[in-house]
Amino acid sequence: MTDRLVAAGGLRVNLAEAGEGDPVILLHGWPQTHRLWGPVMDRLAASFRLLAPDLRGFGETEAPGHGYDGETFARDQIALLDELGIDRAHVVGHDWGGWTAVILGIDHSERIGRMVVINAPHPWPRLRLSLVPELWRSWYALALATPMLGQELLRRTDFAKGILRRASPPGTFTQTQLDAYGDSFREPERARAMSALYRYYHTAFFRVFRGGWRDRRLTIPTLMLFGTRDLYVTPKLLEGYEPHADLMRVEMIPDTGHFLVDEQPDLVADRVAEHLA
Image 1 (cartoon, rainbow, N blue to C red):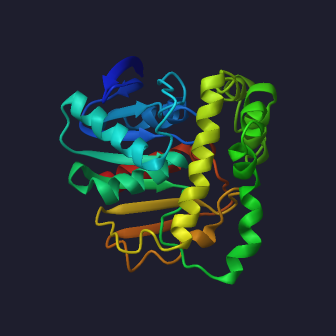
Image 2: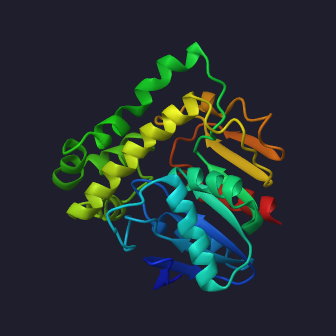
């Protein structure tokens, strides 16, 4: 894996690259960076050209003070493809990267080949009363979105490290990884970016609740992988996509949590290779 800074659409993007073949964008989520994909890239580099950027405000990518939302994240990836001279790419995304992948597939389908979405929801859940008891899972999102509180949690505490530890079996993350991920939000501009991103989280939630994506379709061949022991996203949110996604398949991965890529990199690499082939 090699890293470089790329100017794409007016944003300085930190991009990790490996391998040769059909291009594949790998998108991470919170509280991680492109380093999430290291073990998967090792396994796939013989078959694909792998592009793993840090999202806007994350890692070493610029935090410009605006644009912390799924639609802008998606446009950032199109700008990156333009800068690299790539007409069409596959996309694999986890968490926020998974949501960004879905937005890419809906809004920019002409640029996307196939997709794998990992432990992230789609925008067409079947809304019903049984979802109400699941709202406790979003406690961390409310904390991060709260003005001042969210920033201080990231800058002054080990909040992000706790999110990683709490949702994964012991040994999933080394202390070095926990420190690298958690400490990457100590800078004020990055802490503000994450708080803004989770305010968008609630905006998107209410848009979903109001049926804001009901008139949109996903036509990209899509595989959704979901660890059934996810503490932060309920599997119930995956129900209801059938009228809106022509070629989507959901695979539930038992005995695995939210950070599926870290817990089972071999499984993820195998499923990605199979789906993109």
